[in-house]
Length: 471
Image (tube, rainbow, N blue to C red):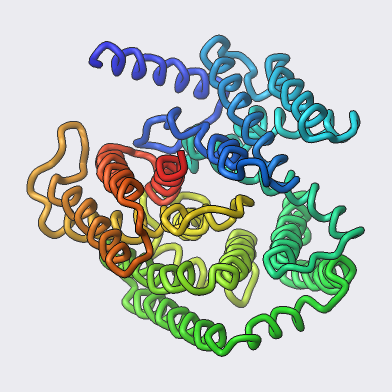
């Protein structure tokens, strides 16, 4: 084991030097996170296994994309380890995952030659060259593992959108889940379009042009497109969906109360003009628990819609902060200053990672995931990581060897998750003994990962737990 760790560390040093030689700056005070790099692709690939023989086309395409992303990740790491010059340029090796994925789309996805080659090139490009471009454009914000996870998630979103939007043009969705998916895809595309235009044309970052282009794309592009795809008003559908059941109305009101509490915490911390403590930051994890646990149990589709729309809203607000667009930019910057931690540099990634980590299983296209799988983010970062941070910061006396985390924090992480897990089991949500046993072992194993990892907890722990739960 010691020899393996030594070889792994030497390999990390070699890759770090390769990145440095190419003027790519990974996040400081962290390892490269190579073990994290393929996890999002693996999560997507495993959807094929989870769906058995009844998978949808979107699920199959997502699985194929995941396989291609894992291969792209391996090719990127291989390239970084064998050559130190000009790795940011598109390399011949990057065509290997592109060709392999194209063949999978052609043979198993039953796509035409042109579509298969185009999508394969997209997967191969974003899964290799795109990761380096992301790290280069946002220096010091990502490790290789974190950049890989973000870029793989973006690739999965783009490919699923490219498959779903044309389908809905010819076949409008009927089921609520399908309607919600179209709305969320168009919403995120809207924000991405505004961001790309602001990056390409700096003039658009001024208040007047920014609001003009944003409302122009929204009113002349996104809204008409949704009417065309859904064959109905998205706003009227959303209102009808909420008011269809009185329980949903109360759920939305309850979530609005949680939102008000969150805004109150931010406002209070800004008025105090002091850096938020660990306990203050973890209050958002508690609020997220208050939203997600009842939502996943009773209204998963409503939570699916809400989480996607909130992600689009978060991205838009972050874009306004980066572009310094009034009237919210000053408040957003103040919030970033008091709540950002050492892992937030140029971008406020912590809240984005938190939302993505909690919602990750919910956003995957698999239709037969268990409640346990859906709770993977809630258990790890909502409950376990929160307990570990609060207990560790206040009572942590004994540190793990080679880590800043405490033994007391890890014990709190494990015990808090097991308490919630067994409480849900006692209420009949889990009735399979072996499933509960596997979940217990997974909680313990991932809690030790939390104790030693230097990657972002909000990103890595939910993905790792999800994989352990579904394999």
